[in-house]
Length: 179
Image (cartoon, rainbow, N blue to C red; front, side, top):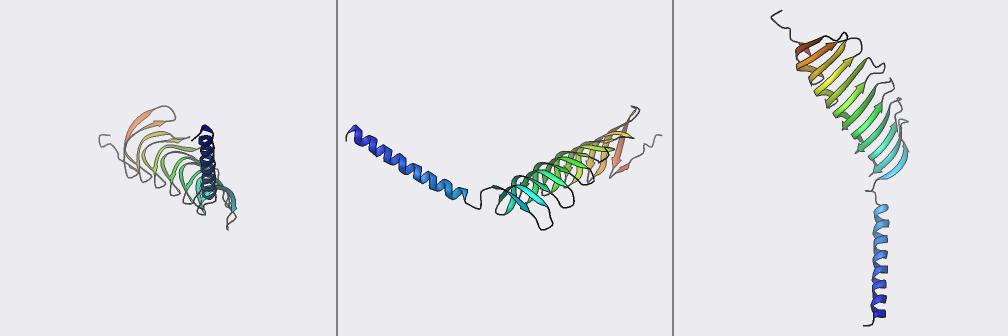
């Protein structure tokens, strides 16, 4: 075979390969399983802008809820999942991780008037694990939480700068018997 024949055969193979790749690419792009950015108005009046897969919110997206809340972040199976920021209609803000539409993992919650700020861990939408609660007119509590309640030992620092070691069980302060 001559060099010219080899070159022509190679060109044909390359051309056929490109045709196959194009067909695969087009069929994949048109598939319902691929994430597609869209804008969708929901029955309740909420408006979603973002990626969808199999007619569900999937990947990155934003939603303006009809009640005035706003969410910007990750979605999985039409539920907030992964990192996202939610600004509630009342002005409260949550920045952090979500799982199945609930706060999960590390995050920050700030009340609308900034009177209360919590930085720490959440589980099933509740404070759970280590966290710091800052109450503007009271002070700061740095300790452990279970099911949204202070639990175990923690350090409380009042607004004057005085520090106190405290112990809690199920949200109730255990008083020191020595006092």
